[in-house]
Length: 421
Image (cartoon, rainbow, N blue to C red; front, side, top):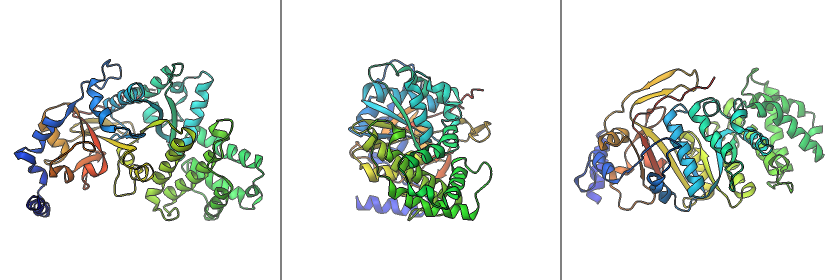
C-alpha cells in the first residue's frame, strides 16, 4: 500500500492522474462500469424507483440530504432531481423540501398554499427563476402542489439569504419592524434605525437602486449584534414561522451575511465569500432542529453549495452541524451537451472533458446515466481520492471530487432547461 501511495504521489507530481491506475488492474472507467447503478429514466413520471434503491441505501439514516446541479440550467438534471425528491418523499420518509431561494419567499409561498393556492403559480418572482420559470424546474413545485391534500404532504420551504425575491423586497423589513415593535424593541428608537433600514433594503433588493452609503452600511454593521441579542431561537406557540423569534433572528443574520457577500467584508470571523453559505447552513439547522424537528429534509441546491469544498461551502457547514452520519451530499456531473445560461437565457454548449476527469472515465464506462456511492462502499480503489471533475459550470476544479460529495449522479448528455414565458 505504501508503494502504491508513493507511486500516486510521483504521478501527481508529474502531472499524471493516478486515475490511470485502478484496483485489480482495472481502469477507472472499467471500475465505474462494474460498480455503477444505472439510472433508467430522468422522467418524474417513471413509475418504478428500483434504479434509485442504491441511492436510498447509500443515504442510510441521514436526516439531511443535499442534491446539487452543475449550472442551474440543465433540463434533464432538473427532471432527475424532481424524480429523486419524489422517491425520497414517497419511499424514504422525507417530509420537507428546502429549495435554494430566499427564506422569507419560501415561507410566504407555503403560507399561501395553506389557504389552497398553488405554489407553482405564485413561485415566479419569489422562487429563483430557473426553478420557477422553466418547465423542468417548476416540475418539483407542481409535485409539491399535487401532494398538498395527501395524507403526508411534502412541505416546501427555502433556506437562503434574501436574494431580491418579491416577498423579501416587499415585506421582510416592514414585517421585521412590526415584529420588533410588538416586542417594544429599543432598537427602533436608536437614531441609526432608519439608516439600518436603508442599508438592509439595499441588501435585500440586491442593490437594485444602487449600494447604500458608508454611514448606512456602518449602521447595519453596528445594529446587527444588538438586534440578534434581543431574540432567541424559539418557535412561536402559534406554530407559524412568521411569528417565531428564531425566524426573525435568522433574517437579521441573513441580511448581515448578504451584506458581507455584496460589500465584500468579513462577517465576524467568516470571509465574505463564505458568509452566505455559512448563514444558509444556520438557517437549515434551525429548520431541522427547531421548526421541523424530527422531520427529514432534502435540500435542492447548486453543486457549489451542495458539496463540501475547501471547508467553506454549505455542505461543509451542514456536516459540521449535523455530522457525517446524518448528512448525505449528492452531486451531479455530465460529459457533454448543452445548458441554458441563467444570466441571459442563451444556450451554451458543454464541451467534452479532458482525459482523466471522472466525466471522461464515466463515458468510458458506457452508461448514459448512473449513480455511484463512496460513503457506504468498502475497499474503493485509491484513485477515487485523487480524481477530479467539473462540478461548477463544466470547469475543471483542482479538488478531488469525492472529498466533496458522498455520491455522484452522472448524466452523459445534459440538455437545456425550457423557459416558460
